[in-house]
Image (tube, rainbow over all chains, first blue to last red; front, side, top):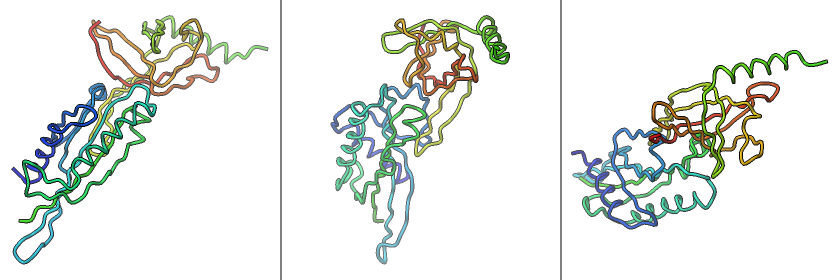
Length: 142
Length: 121
């Protein structure tokens, strides 16, 4: 398998093994596509995003693998009491990966986490759904 | 002098309600009411958002504004209300996203919804 899918699978395994404020059942997808009516339950989706290659030293290259982690759930009222726990979960996920090597792919070093979509206002407005996306970047020297 | 256009519009809306509607259940919390609704539009769409695509079915319901009475009070739609439509043994649950009047005389509500679930009738 490609390294990026190995890393994505390792992220899925970490998410499913960890304990967060609410249960998480993450899945990896190539083409994540869901119907709105499926989104009543929490969806955590892991999607390979980009690979950036650069020279590291004379003999090795460094590859930065970025993987998106999307947290989504359709809400009932959309008030703070309902959305705050979801945003807190995203923060917990970000904190969980910060500075940590992945248990099933320890060659990848955590580089950074970006909250590329803190929350999608258009999803709140048009779908009454919470969507937040984290981008995790790992560096591998080869 | 009466507004002829308004009278004509009212007659047309009455005819629509008599001949081009089906019963749906309009629900807000514990309150509900059976109203006669015309299906105004149904479209399947995809939101090509960041990372994850969401597919959804849009459906508009046209309802006489005087028919929408919940818990004894006339009301207008609110985001999050549900419209439950039964067809061939399946209840399709639509969630209200927005609404507007569909005519200049505020006789008919165009209730914009998205399909959020199905249940067995």
